[in-house]
Length: 428
Image (cartoon, rainbow, N blue to C red):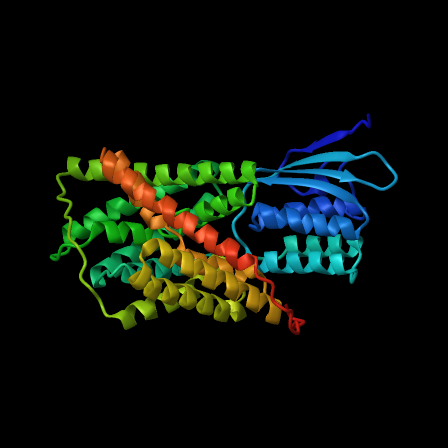
């Protein structure tokens, strides 16, 4: 029996600072740093493991890799020495499409033999030191713009759009503050939901016209809703990444519960202050204004994902294809099959663009799935359960599950199709 020395790298800091960790000049050190970088920048488990397997094979190593939202386990099998097992403790990172794009490009060049593992490791170090593309105020403004546009997509009027924008700006400010406070970071969903709902209640109290508070709150909190995480979790489960999928699914449920708790607590405070909470509905709005809102929201998502300004076109294209497909397919086939068709359309679009222009699939998948995912529906489900509407909450939760399964099925079907690769552009 071959003894496997195990090393646990448990601190969420640079591997260069960990005693006795493999140096970045070694192939094993490159594999560890590549896995950590891909995880930090938001790559799903099934794609991360495939990338690491490809790099290890190109370097002449065997590897067994397992990724979860909080850790990466790598067993490296060198050709002429005993296997080594490494466990890297990582914190779930925010999606950073530009760093993910550059890191994925390094992995592709190592696999193709264009660069050595040592050169790849040095490039990863430069990527990690890149300064953010956008100032904090730009991110706050992006949160507000996206929230306002989502309110219009939900058929909100001027008051709903303005209220959602105020809450979105508040969420953006709290998100920036949470980067400096561990406590606020852990309680960010509940804090944002509480303050956002309080703001919506006061807006409804002050303005002369009743507003749809649910539209204002859901639109204002839309960036925090873990609909995308929920869909990725179901995709990981469908691809047999059970540990990562289950952990991500639990994490999404926890965020939903925090959001619902914060809103429910704010509603209780409103009642104590004797503020009447209205249940005004929304009226149908012009379709062209919804299209315009989708387009502006897609541009607003660019800073939130730390993508380049020049990539705004791909965000716009993805969002418009997703919305148009779902809108017309839902009218003909219903909500579940509409989501299924939308997922197929986005999956095919991602494969075509990646094949022809060498654009990472995440550049297309992420903004498209933001339009498709049932995050707002899941939030209403948990909120209904908190308000003791058990039947209503379970019915909405079932709808969330069906739509989520439809999205994953459509994505998997589109990923099975092979497309010929076209000419790649050097800048990508």
